[in-house]
Length: 212
Picture 1 (cartoon, rainbow, N blue to C red):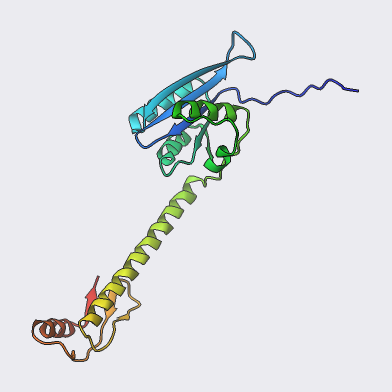
Picture 2 (picture 1 turned 90 degrees about the horizontal axis):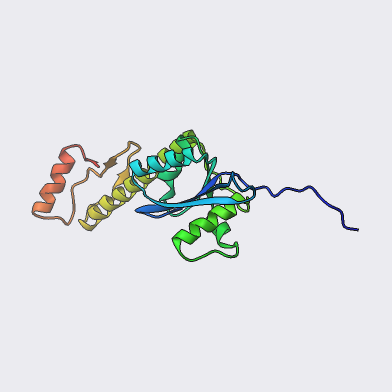
């Protein structure tokens, strides 16, 4: 025997979805219709990704009472938009494009894609990706930048060592523990004549240290 249930469809009352590109984004807002219960009102606008238009978009979302803003992780274009809206006090959701792609009914155009994403978000059919808080993001960016610098320093050391080997230096360069310095051999160069010999001898006389 079938029985009545009292389950209510969980719909986010005021939600926005963004389709972000390099130069502009499309914002879709869906809110409840106060005059007709059960109906939804919708607004679709395009904004530039510059700071001033984004601030204007944040003010508009605040006026409409939007509580959650959903966007796809598109390249690195989402970062300034996400950080600005996060600082403005919105509940920002970054969703994985792979998870959204597998949902049926996705349209082709950016405008319709934004509307579809907003409808999916208001019904809570997607889940957010983990975005670290600002202190962890700063530490992550710092450590990644340091790793890039170390890799660049190592590549430059290898390039200088290869250059000296091509110049028939008697002993390959030995990396020094000090950052940015290489220690070379103090022996007299063999097989180098003319200006090349004078250049190498001058470098050894200066202390055999090459600062990068």
